[in-house]
Structures are given as structure tokens and as C-alpha cells.
Amino acid sequence: MKKKLSTIVVTVSVLVCLVQAAGDKYSLKVPGGLAFSEFKGYESWPVISISRNEKVMATTVGNPAMIEAYKAGFPGNGQRVPDGAKMAKIHWSQKKNAFFPDAAVPDKLVNVDFMVKDSKRFADSGGWGYAVFDYDAATDSFKPGTSAGTPPQGNDAKCGYACHTTAKERDYVFTEYGKR
Image (cartoon, rainbow, N blue to C red):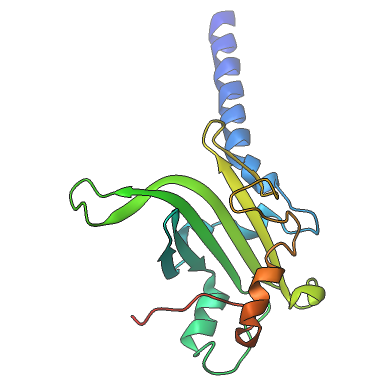
């Protein structure tokens, strides 16, 4: 009986550790308050767009508020994105497709960038909060991006503001919503 109880305790302990390890990314936060947990479920949000350069490829996804803004005609309709809209941009290194070598496909996860529209909380950065979380394959974990990352990133909730000012007329959003 003791052996059975001991096996159950060990099994439960392992399961608790696995659950805690899986939830670690949701405990991360960048200075200025933007937390990974604010984007829980981003993995299943609809695709807004894809992009790539010589180093990485990316998929940008949006929560329902962001998708509705695009469907309503943003940015061409001249409207601002509503508070609560969120986007996540997932970057991977790339490799040739084994079955179609002219095509590139995702390889290793590099990082995830987040944007949230909250005009009160982020009034001094165009109403948007930003965060970059770099992925470390060796530990299967994320950490806030830093100026030592590739590309270098500020690691606070305003980290993307300087770059996004070039799209100020589009409410600081670069991403196009492809016709469907």
C-alpha cells in the first residue's frame, strides 16, 4: 500500500511540474506592464498576414477586435483601431520545403511580438503597448527581448513605438490584411 501511495505522489508531483512548466510563459511580463498572459490563446487567432525577409518568416494573427477592425476597412476607412485589439507576430527561422524546394517553410521558433491597443494605459506610445518574447529552444521557454537580441529590442511596453511611428497615419500598424 505504501509503495502504491508513493507512486501516486510521485506521479502527481511530475504532473504538477509539467503543468507549471507549461504555464511559465504566462507569468512573463515586460517592464511597463505588458504580460504574456494578456495574449493567452494567440496560437489559435485568425491570420492577418504573413511576411518574410532573408532571416525569418512570420505570421501575424489578431484577436476578434483586430480582425473586426480590418473587416470594417481599417486602415483605409480612416478609423483608429479600437481599444482591446491585439496582434501577435510569430517569427521562425526558415528552411526549404523538403517536397517543394522553391518554397520556404517555418523551421525553429525565434520569438513572438505582441501589440495591444489600450489608449489609456499606453497614451504616451500612440495608444499601443508592445512586447517581444524571445524563445530559447534549449530550455523550451520564453524570456523578454532585450537590446542583445536579434534584432535588438527594447524590453519595455514601448519597445516597438519608435519603429511604428513610421505608420502613425495608419494608427501605428504596419500589417496589411490580405484580401480573402
